[in-house]
Length: 488
Figure 1 (cartoon, rainbow, N blue to C red):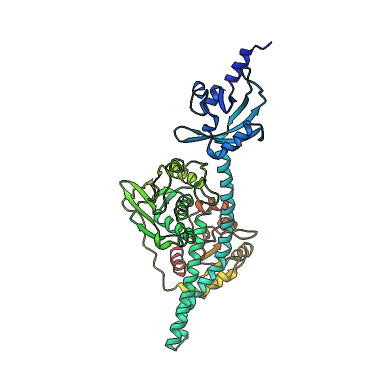
Figure 2 (cartoon, rainbow, N blue to C red):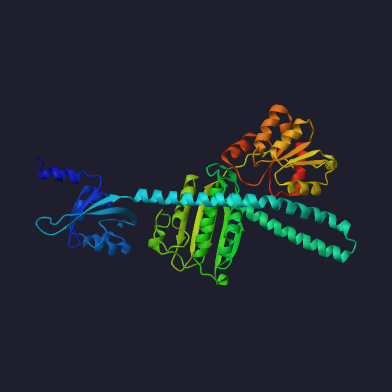
């Protein structure tokens, strides 16, 4: 028969915390419970249980102790000096302890599980948003390509078509304004693509100033009504990182700063972002003159699960931003005083540039570009039409599918350059490339891939493996001309 001391050893060795409470004070706690709260069983005896629980959870725990709450529930406990843990408490049917009424609890530490679940939930949500953004960007890029292409063509041709000087000036001004509007849409789409790319772990040398500009575009609607934006972007070294993940860091910091200041008082507040190189580190500082952050909140600012009002930025977003920066070998800190604003500081190791970067000046465009034999393969025929007009090509052929492209090339036709959409229904640009490499060896080097921004894992791996040029939609005519001169 088991002896009482056997049960004591069982409880003391339990991986879950066990505590007995009478009149709201500890009368017993095992080693696990005490270790979770970073103290000792002896130190807990006689202590008020509610003093260890965060204020917002005390009423629920009072009801649980009184038997008026669900017998299993989760509570946040404070751990000195300024940390916190989450315990899933289960009330035990203990009616007395040492002959007097008492209430028993089992406490399971679920802090790590809660943090992981929250991060997975956000990651899943961000992946869904990223997929949606990438799809939207791809659908916009195709029509935007021929809108901008045709506008460029009209800007070039209008002077020769309209004799009246005043009318010509008015038409040109209208066309240039329309083109600028299209360019703004193009920049917005580019920023969407940067923040939604699937290659989240792929690291390359990136320029933080360019990432900051994109993040500002994404956050501008939140900033413009709250603060004046002051940019002081200095010369910086490139950093080794992922453009989308670093963009997520900057975007989170911008939104956190913007939301610290009330709407409608932009003339009274400033949001300042500056960059520079300190030694071999690239430093980004983002400051606001908002109300500042209370010390007890500041201590937990980068915790995965800080308590903050619903609908405000920060919280898990700041925790993830901190994790991203640390994973890149850098640091993210915050300084703040109540009423004195807040400054976030990101420091990342810079990549020293080697002498002789190997960069080449743009290739000169030959005068005979109009005679180039060009094949355009794209399921959006209007893109090819716009290209033909803009390039003034007399020898440009168009097919709207990969199958028709293979039929054309099987007939032995020769082309100086082949512009091929990467992602098409049925046969993709990758399939066309593989067929050409096998059946028309050498011709594959003349293929230029056009992309609208949507990359499957296969497409991403393919583009990394082949040396062919890539033309991002919507493209600038001058960029097309430079590629033509280089590929031919």
